[in-house]
Length: 370
Image (cartoon, helix red, strand yellow):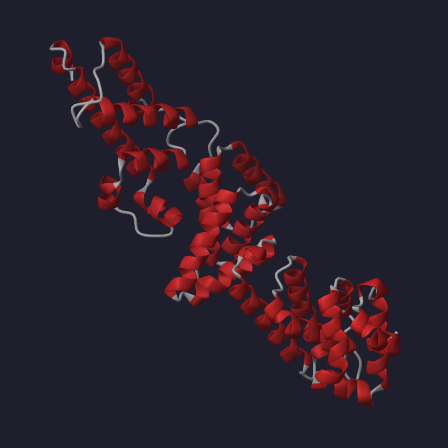
């Protein structure tokens, strides 16, 4: 570099400087830990993968793992553009003078060659260690939430993706899964569109590869965060119908009064997120109404509030299905025909409905049961 500068070959000099900066950034990643990067990325990452990274990808990786600051990312990315367009590495767009070389050198030294620390970032390795150490208590959870709030968006989005991967990993303990969920839940309402898109892409990857265990865990992750509406209509149909079938299976067992509540709560969570597509409305409505009507022995009192909440939020199309089911859905029709208790409980459900929401074609049925 010095020889190139002394002879006026500034385009060659900045190429040498940039190469030194890239080597130093790779060293930072190695010191951080290739295995840690692999765990966060959710896939293999070794020395070969590091060397094959494009310069822009390497700079972005360093930012996401908090190895450089946001300022460092900006200026190094700017240096990368200068190196690509004004150095001997490519046909240059123009020429540089000594002042441009000094600025370029200063930026590379300050943001790559020196051991710069970023006070705003999260120590990713320490975060992973804490996640695995045991269940977070309230102060510990609050502290990590504060640290993620204070870091830059690029690292925060990366950590959200990492937590989703840990939650879906079959090898993760329940403590890791719950810790990961608690941290992400604190940011659910302000999660950026970019990170939501990345999570959906990863979920779609599980679906495409046939990884049933990870796909199921991912569905649970989305549901618990209240963002299951991001799924495609076909997948939402599958989620709702499966939840309905599980609830009906439990409802038909001899000990249903005790076992129904968690399954009813699960279906209620999905309904609250506007996940029910039109294709699953019939099964959803009939399941809720049958379970809320109960059988000849009664109804699960602990599950009843969930059923009533779902019925209260029925839209006209769902109300129509509910009223028609008294004649067309065999299980409900049989119970209403033979058991007084079922008829009384169904009338109570009908009384929850807003008369103005009842379609005109079903007013007669509504009046019969109200």
